[in-house]
Each structure stands twice: as structure tokens, then as C-alpha cells.
Image (tube, rainbow, N blue to C red):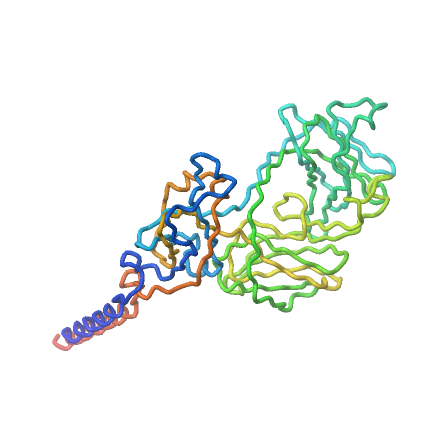
Length: 464
């Protein structure tokens, strides 16, 4: 009995190991990488020259740099953070690279101001003057604090280096933002926006005039200011082939997108809407299986006609027109276009839920998913061709000094090259341990051992 079991195990092992023998493909050292793509870098007799902008700069680090943008299909085959990405030349040697992803950044620190003048003007709204702290050298954002749960208002912001006397007040103030829209509608579950941005200012005093329809005042509890520095993210529209509209709950409209893989980074949902005026809550959710949905971001999509003649007495509508497309970002970062913005997320399925309540669904609505592309930047050597490898779940993230040697300007000057179609490594060898690749054999062996032990126990009982 024991001899038979050992013979079965030996034969199975030989057959399975024989199936793993490589045929042909990448060099032996790279046989654990399953996929590769050639780069359209022409073989040259000399390094590729730098871009004209840096050609006259002695010792420019951008000389010979090329950049390949990863296609969306790479994300489905590679590790989530692209740790298994490798770059090799035609000799099979590993080539250092920089993985570039410009996700942008936003920095600001709120400071509390001293409100030196606060009151309501009958028929106009709330008037407030805020003194900026002396250690705040410049500012471009203010946040209005109020405990009122529901309000819609427009704000005029004026600046002055000094606190002018009443008789010279109008001539001393310089308007730097007019018709800024703020709101909060907690009865509809919307926290809204209470932040107003304006051009960078060094003024010591800010004057706010807050106007609500009907001239009603707004109860302020404070005013804060900040200097916001924004580094714009690089964003590209993701190819979306499959958009469906599953039935939603009463008073809701749903759109669902299947990206085909859960590895693609997404950080924005953008909208195109045909309806001329609307005010709707919208939420973006993501899922790995299309069943369990996780919140990604929320916003208030708005296109409203500003009330003519009621923003401020004698003031025109914002931006010189009646229509204004604005949205409250879920991060509380102010207003922008018809966008739901959130920290980068991954998920195969994406769902957008628009709260219509009793209104008709928005007409002509189209959604777009946007994300930050990844670029492979490296230095081309003479007479060399290159391939990108990926598809090794056991590979660790590489560490190259090139990332510390290249400045941002150098990376911007890298010459873009094409990435070819995906190729499968014919000599691929699964990098997982043998036991993980063939769990069935282990279960069979375990079953045989259990059966043998049972027979031995039974025989012992009979002898006893």
C-alpha cells in the first residue's frame, strides 16, 4: 500500500515539473515575467538629443531621456502598485527608470481672523470686516463659519491695506471677488460650500457683503483665511466601453461603468448635462464584484441662473452672465466645474447615483472617468532597444537612484515614445512555490496518507 502511494506521488510530480520546463521567450533571468511590450525607441548611434528648451543648458539631465505612457491594459496584468514593472534592453540587462505620476497637491492652513465690524444692513444682508493676522503675509481663500443649517447666499469680497474711516470707506475698498456662491442644505443632506476663493492678496483687512434672497442676514460665528497653493494633477480620460443604466430607487438615476479591471486608478468623475438648470446631489461608488459598493466621493452638481439684480444692489450676475456651472467638491476645496473629485481609488465597477427627488432625470447626462496616467522615464543608450516587462506577482518594487538624479524640469523634457501591443512570454515560469501552483496534488497526497493511516489503524484493531 505504501509503495503504491509513493509511486503515484512520484509520477505526478515528474509530469507537473515537466510541464513547467521553458520553451522559448525572454532571457532566463526574466522567465518569471509573463508579459512584455516593446517601446518605439529607435536604435541610434548617439544618445537622443535633449529638447530644444534645454539644448543650450550645459550638463542638462534631460539629455537622452524618453518617456513611455503605460496603456490601461497594463494595470490588469501587473501588480496593483506596479511593483513588478521592469525595463530591459536588447541584451537582457535591467535598465533604471522613474515611474512618474503627477497626482497634484493642495496645501493650505486656516487662520482665524478678528471680526472688527459685523452687522446686518436692512434689505441688503450681512456686512462684516475681518482683520487678517499680522503673520499671514498673503491669502487667497476665506471660509465663512455659521451654524445656520440651510441657506443660499452670494458674497462680495473687498480688500484694503488699512481700516478706512466711514466717510472714505467706499473709495478705500477694492473689490476682489463678486458673486461668489455659498450654501448649505442639511435638510437635503448637503453640507454645501462655505469657502470663497479670490486672487492672492496681501491686504490687512477684508470686507464681506453677504446677500440672501429677500435681504435676510446670515448669522456668522467667525471668518477664517488661508493661502492655498495648488499643484494641478495630470489627468487623462479613461476609455469607457460599457456604460449601463440599471434601475435605481425611487427619485434616483443610476449609471454604471465596467472598466474590465479593478487595477486602474481613478480620481475624478466628470459630467456633461443637457438640462439648462438643475441642483442635484450626486455620489460616486466603486465595487470589485458589482455587488458590494463602497463610497468614493460626493458632490452637488449645479447649474443655476443667478437672480438678476439681487446678488448685490446694483451688481451684475457673476462672470457677467446669468449661467454658472459650479460643483461642491467632497473634499471641501471650493467650487469648480461638473466634477466629483476624490482621492485616487481603484475598482472595476463604478456607479454614479444622482438624486432627482421628484424632478425629472437630467437630460443628456454623460459621465467620464478620469485618472492620473503613469509614465516610465529612462535614459536611452546608443544602439539599444527596450522592452517593458510585467506580470510577476512575486516581484518586489525596484529601487533606482535615477529618481533622485532627475529634476522635474528634466522629466518634463523627456521625449514621448510609443508602446507596442502586449506579448506573452513563451518561456514563462510561474514564480510561485510548487506547493501553491499545484494544491490539488497536495490534497491528493493528504487523502492518500489519511487513507493509509486508516487502513493501518483498522489492521491494528483487528489484530488486537
